[in-house]
Length: 85
Image (cartoon, rainbow, N blue to C red; front, side, top):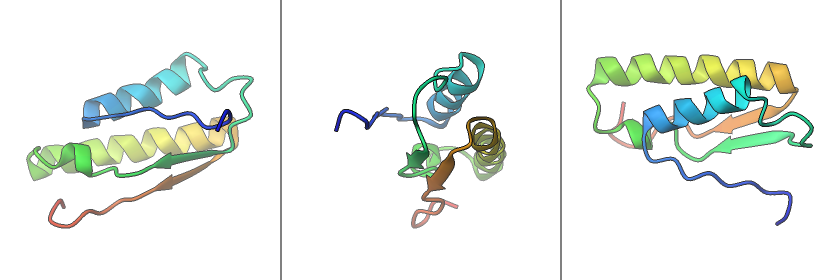
């Protein structure tokens, strides 16, 4: 388990901030990370209005795509949850 990093995120803004920290602060630099798993993209967003939720999901996927490209890693996400989108 020493090679597994776990970050508990409870809101969409927290998730976006986490991804930005990975990108801007080069948090992943020098670490041998090949896979990021996002257990649920939509769960932290379920209380938001649909328009806001979809905009944030779009931003999240853009940032995850940049992260995957910049650090040559795979990103696995659960996208849909029942009654969320």
